[in-house]
Image (cartoon, rainbow over all chains, first blue to last red; front, top):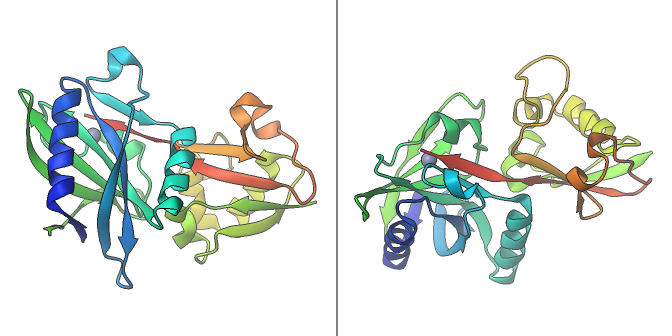
Length: 141
Length: 96
Ligand SMILES: [Zn+2]
């Protein structure tokens, strides 16, 4: 279970629409409760470092970006809970490429952007054996 | 030669929740191999081959020796000083 507030919902849509027809990406910062539930408290947008001609269907966050995000998380007294990206003109369902590049534990929030308009937002988690992405329930605060 | 490996949050469920692990190794590659031997459940996430001998690391695992990405050094052959620190840092990618 992951919870997101109205501010995050608006920001996800805004970021997805701004990047369209390319993909946007960023980091989810927040806290984890004792039962493993995640509460997103802020988003950290990251400049898509994928090759410019591939950004319509790819995003990349470098290790250097990750380290900077971790530093920012510490500054905010938060943790990195996962990542978000947009699917321009595709449903908010992880691709095979998403799965090949995913790590367990993190939430992968995907916002679908159809014809430049942000729509469905869904969240996914990779199983510990890398076998599959399982949908994670989003609680809208 | 003992070196310390810092494990990212995402992989700590495979290292008994430990964030720092001390292993023996003279290079980044040797140290990571020792880590994978000590915590075999890590292998599938660290190495491209899902089973068998450790080989190439997955593209989303980057290795920093003393804060420098080994891509800019000698890769997995990068030497690590005794008491040195290795960081495993995820790179995140995906798409449609
Ligand atoms: Zn995707």
